[in-house]
Image (cartoon, rainbow, N blue to C red; front, side, top):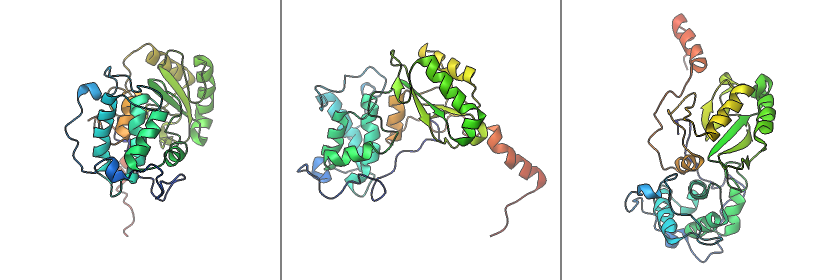
Length: 278
């Protein structure tokens, strides 16, 4: 993912469903999992998203032993970054989403147990934030900005034509599992409106025709590069892993700013303009 993506922060005292002191699990974060910062060894390639790894759930609400071991290793690294284990809930939700393609019942159970929280506390947080999905998303999650500027520049038309073209709506996935769609609020890229995102990478200055071609190419397995950022797209599961705070090494790959964003700076430099002195 590009440098525009940042790992999730912590939910303490800032969000509904805040993980309170009563856990209801009989475990504390410290006893559920050590909070030392070491990983106990780097995850093998077999444990990386999109590499043909073992199916996640042995049965509803549980993970198989190999998946569980890998998740615990990654969770230990993440939890070690925070003063209190429960503060790691948001990145851990991204972690389990990277395993299943959404926050499954098994993912809720894992987060609750490992952090010493009740399942209700975990679900209360995961269902508040729209980036945590309640059902499996596609390999490529396509977001269309429908906020004010993008909407008047064509975002609403893009959404209407794209949903008709694919036959799926908001947070729905195509039958082949390749693409899911989402109506997005502002992507903080108004100078490139209308904007779309695929797994949180930017696709600027879109039209209904280019949007439909992009989705068709993704479903056909073609190599697609974002307008800015890395030269390749990661999968939705891989993007979730990065949001959990486990980098993929692509943060500095490619430009993060485009000409429209930099034009004002060029004009200011050419005219010798500077911000007022404080």
